[in-house]
Length: 524
Image 1 (cartoon, rainbow, N blue to C red):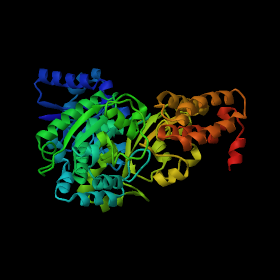
Image 2 (cartoon, rainbow, N blue to C red):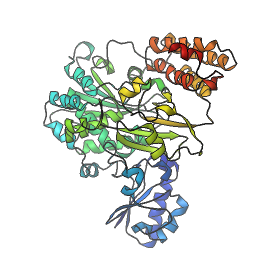
Image 3 (tube, helix red, strand yellow):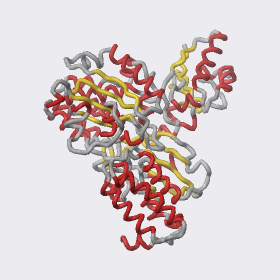
Image 4 (cartoon, helix red, strand yellow):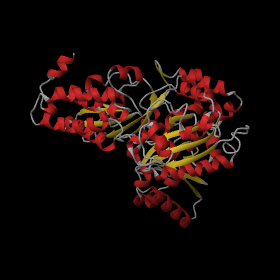
């Protein structure tokens, strides 16, 4: 029987993947061909979606980008058993875009059936959880600390330190009747990011496994995955995968045969960007308006419903199984400096070959956007690249060869964030984009602190006056950004100056200012 893989990833679905799968099954039934259609995830080569793969004795052969109208001719040409066709891409693993990557976290994405726990296990899954089940909580935490794993979000805080805090936290006061908790922040709201979604839709068991390991490490008995409301396919897939994992005994009444219970559920997010901030997320999870909490107390001591709570994002938790399966030293040996492991960079915007590229930290931005991304889709020169989401900096050409690691980018005044890389060609106006950052902050602010709520509103006005020719507004804009940067309660207001100042510093002529700007020279 021939096995044909048709992705059920959101990108593929938008391009007719369901129709393609139905057409393949329909034509095969009519012709009497023995074909099994498997709905896998995406490999992240989005310009080739829908990417249909056929299992052959020599490995999988790919065809794409396929549309429903292509199916009949493809089947007639023998594509269902790996035959030649104009859409043929040859062996999928030999596609240069994939072959040049080092896929660890995404090793199974696009390969396995997302809802098959046995398929997941056959491809190395559950090995980390099996190892953790034989270890003491402190040993698990120590392995995560020694791996150097840092949160794959804006702050890049060491994951093991957060886990250690929760492990050591006593259950007292209002939390006394409850256990500790694991909360996964899957409110992936940054522009140009989609790695979380790809995990949840294509390899959800790796996230479930990571959360189960975190539960064993900290003594947590309940977990929640907080998924952005715009991800209905991810929510549907996660709920099915959790049920499958429970039925197989990996979570639920006993974690992988241990005596510890771990109940896992999915919560649909509130549809607010600020709920990606961990304390606003907790407020939303508790049924309240998503507003940032003051700290202390830290969520690790008093988080969800007053419980000591681990809050990590999808990529952080999904990285844990490989640490336990292969050992902390092996994980720590990959990467660049203190930025250990691999990072899934997501190429988006005006780029020819948009998609996901997983490589160790230290790769350059130029390698990502030119060698993998193929330059701009428009064919025009690249002008600026925003890294780290809508509140990330615009990185100019003179910095594209710098190694992408947390320390280097921090020293540059930039951030890697969630690994989003959005490309702009020379038709983009950075003053427009800077204004949009301020307007975005004003719209999405929870309103709790003045620097964010009022500063962003005034920021739009100041940028407008600056662009109308009032050069003195540059000084005011820089002062305003300084106030937001140092006075905001959370990263919403604290990071909004990043795109504004980087645009002002590196592209002053877009604001009608000379090169370099007077205020920039003064600041140096």
